Image (cartoon, rainbow, N blue to C red; front, top):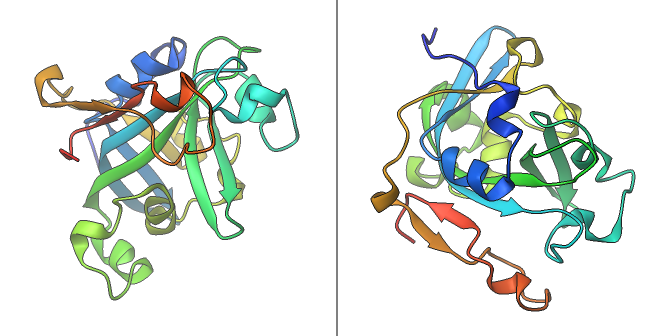
Length: 195
């Protein structure tokens, strides 16, 4: 078991861009049937409310995105391309939808379980994309709305050593080819992976 503290609601109750940067180096933890899986968060993207045309909330509240309009510190898990789950953390004030997409991580614990779920793939690509890490960690729509500030949810983030700003690469978000400017080029992707 870890000696790290779970990040509190106050960590998420601020601007999504600040949270996205601050999440780098923190430990995502999933507990299933008493088994612990964890990894260091290495890549994130911020999505900043109804004004952000790259954000799911830009068209208003729907059944799919309603968790984003709720309190900060909740998991927003959605299905994409008819085949993949993506994990986000709700940020900012309740009623002002924003979230951070967890794009990649470096596995730490539960390596046998991750290896089984990502069978036939090299360790360095087990969790190097948003759909890959949800598969590796067993995150599905069942975790949508989970309180990530409580160990009871089985999905939470633990405080770890913050990443130094000088080691963070900041780029536009990925895959927003059909989103108009300036939103397509907003420098709201943060990574320690150097690409």
